[in-house]
Length: 258
Image (cartoon, rainbow, N blue to C red; front, side):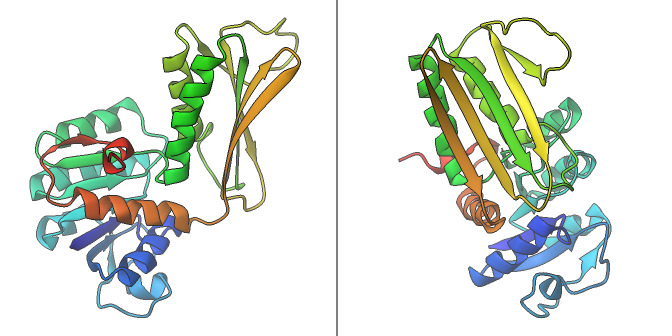
């Protein structure tokens, strides 16, 4: 498999480089806005591999990559989608904070190539989302609060994973609406609320807790990531799975289907 990486100089990009190389995957293109000219293998801590970081998605046009793994920015993902589609390169994106324009660009790309976007590439988080759906449906009178905690450098809030968990809860409880934090005197909590809370500090990779609170009891469904490798492992697994698939939109549910 020939792999391109967008966001190659970031923490996730470097992890993908290291784990993809260990898995015997050929890295043919590395795109990033920083560390341009440096060997991407050196950035990933595995020594030089003969592929230098470039600044510009035009490199994808000639890379002949089977798939591109994207851990970048919403603006970069927006620009990447049509370029990858034109090049016939499958897209695996874990970029969070996407606006509707970037999501639409990925949908348009899926007409020509296979596309999988997930705000969290952890298999454990996917399983958590399934458990949340079942729990919310089974506990219709319980209040729902979602709390996520990340490192101080994270730029978007709530996290994409928290929003996905809230979306799952909303699907299981029709009419539920999101309330982002509380202050002052908001009054008694409405039954249809799903509270969303974002904590930032230190070097926390990512914690997500869905609280289901009823009379005299509560249920806390938790996922804690202690290493970014879990997301990189997931992305590499997805990249192998999606290579050669027909054009279309996919999700982790497809990758994990029996």
